[in-house]
Image 1 (tube, rainbow, N blue to C red):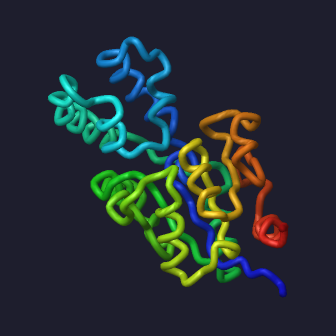
Image 2 (cartoon, one colour):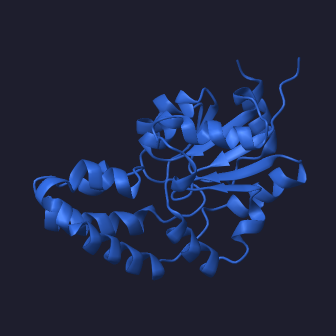
Length: 218
């Protein structure tokens, strides 16, 4: 039986948008201020929801700073630039021409997405579904978010490809038992290779035929 390629499921930052360096700058500053004992703080929090960051690093005495950091983050995101990863627009257009369903599956919240929609009015038209942190109960690296996305399209896990860059996200795609394409936009190719079926630097040399070949692999 020929396997179908039904859905492409994309993380947002570092996968659709080349924004990871901007977030690293923001969280490096917060880490310097509140966790000077963790010089790699901005790396430690990649792929986590804001609530996970607070639960893991801003509990106890530091919990009182959560509102301040949230305000800072909201202001920071208003000034961010949302540049698409190289080749993404052409790639997602090719997917849609071939009838492949597309979804964003992000740990970002709806407040952040409003900034995206304001700066990129075409964004919603690129995807059939947009799932945010409010749409699933367990965050990455748990598989819930990608299984929820697949269910929106009545797609089996074997019919979906996950596109991720962070370790939590890559592990989430693996836990969902889907094929995983790792974007080396945040971490090195060697670092993400154990969690990816294919590693790419961007979408300039990756297309629908590559996806079909990946789906066919056992």
